[in-house]
Every structure is written in structure tokens, then in C-alpha cells.
Image (tube, rainbow over all chains, first blue to last red; front, top):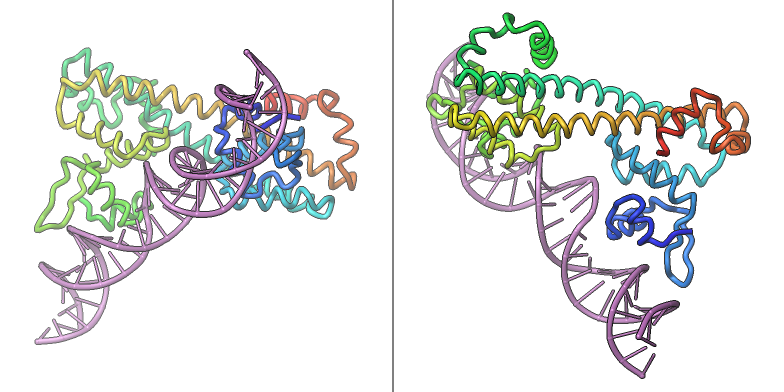
Length: 145
Length: 145
DNA sequence: GTAATACCTAAACTTGACTTTAGGTCAAGC
DNA sequence: GCTTGACCTAAAGTCAAGTTTAGGTATTAC
């Protein structure tokens, strides 16, 4: 069992955020002793799930729905499975998108490196849009598709 | 040259968002004809950069700084290069983190699939934390590290 | 016993990124 | 000539996700 301060350190989250999550109903099973929150394995795993659902773009109020299902036993397995399957698609799409953004950023790194070497952007711009060095062309094409 | 409505369709962004970006100084070079915005190649590329800097977590006011540097010519090449190098690190870290979140989600998909088959979670919980099937164990370990 | 810590609440405040509203211009089609 | 559609502005409103404030309790350290 952990106090809110210990959990705050473990997850590197402000205490105020943990209290806010609790107020929003994200720890429906949490116990208290004389008013003080006691975080158990349940709540630690809940926090891992919260971080993961948040990373997938889910809002707090929808995370609460999931946490409520988890208190309702076997009859909500199907719903919970479907939620994670949907989040999986969202995260996979987000990774694909970030890869594209990363290619743009890599292209821009090369662009400014080269501009610094040349003292201007003219040589680069003359290579656009399809006469870039092969590796760079790949980045450029992916970023501009 | 495009109108705001055409750009809105091209980038699938509300017109109000484009006007907001303009008001925040994200298109410092934009021309107008009798009050009406004219988006050129400059602004189209700016929007691609905006999406990419936003995806990397940069705030609008910091994106404006970059757009201002871009109007200042060769003397800001170094700063611009450093900005993209920093964004590169942020995006790479974010992809790594999303991979971890994705492994958690995949684990949970398997978890609920199996719970549905079994009718309960007992069999699964007996395998925690290190007696899971090999492929699933990998997901679990990465998600809980 | 008193001071420092770590916990607690309710409610107000903050921030960033838009979005909406209310009112207006301007060119094209009928 | 007048309606329709696409554009414009300034200012107010919204929303999610916290954070801060003000005031209080409870256990430990000296």
C-alpha cells in the first residue's frame, strides 16, 4: 500500500493531479484510512492504464467509464476488449503519423545543415521537388505525401 | 494561389482555425487582395511545418517564433536547425513511448479475449507476472517496465 | 507541547487552442 | 437590383485538464 506522495514519485505526477483523477472517479475501488487515500496494486495498475488510454487520446470522462466497467465483472469483458481494440487502432495510426512528422523533421534538419554549409537555400531549392539525394528524397516524399 | 476555403479542404482544417493561426502570426508572409487572404506555396509549406511542430508538442507561440526566424534569412539558419534537432528528439521519444503504450493495449486485448474464453480472469491472473505465453510476456514486460 | 510534514477538501483560477457570434464587405448569377 | 455564397473582423465563449488557494487534520520529531 502506498500514500499519494509515494505514488506521485513513482509515476512522476503531481499530487494535485492524482487527487484530480480520484475526484473524476478514476479509482473507483480506492480505500481510505481515516480520510487518507491508500493506493494498492489495483490503483497502480489503474494508473498504468490511465497513462496508456490518455496517450491514445481518450478523455478523462471516458477513462472513468472504463474504470467503472472494471468494477462490474465478467459482463463487461466484451466492452472492455472492444475499447482496447479501438485504442489499438488509434495508437497505430498515431505512430504512423508521427513517423511522417519525423521524416519532415529529419528533412528539415538536413535542409538547414545544407543551407548553413552553402550560406543560402538556393542550391537546395533548385533540387526540389524531385532531384534531392536519394535518402533525403525519401524523407521529403513521405513528409509531403 | 488558394483561398482560405480551398486550404481548409486541402488540410481538412476549419476556416476558423486557419484565421486563428493567421492572427497568431503563423503566416508572416501572407499576402492579401482587397482584404482577402491569398495562400501561396509559402503558406502551404508553413502549414505542413505547423502540423509537424504541433505534433511534436510545440505551442503556437513558439511556432510563431520559428515562422519569424524564417523571414529573417541566413542569420537564423543555425537556430532553425537546432529547433528541428530538438523536435526530432521529442518525436523519437514520443514514438518510443507510444510503442510501449501499444504493447500495453495489445496485452489488454489478449487479456480480455482470454477472459471471455475462460469466463473469468482467474487463469490469467495466476500466470502473472512471469508465466504468460512468450509473445504475451514480451508485451506485458515492456508495458510494465 | 509545539513545530514540521504529509495528508485532506471545496472552490476558484489558469492555460492553450480553438470556436462561436454578431455584424459587415464584395463579386457573381439571375 | 437583389440575393447568394464566400470572404472579413473583433470580441466573447468554450472546453479539457489540470493547478492553486485557503483553511483544516493527524502523526512524528524534538
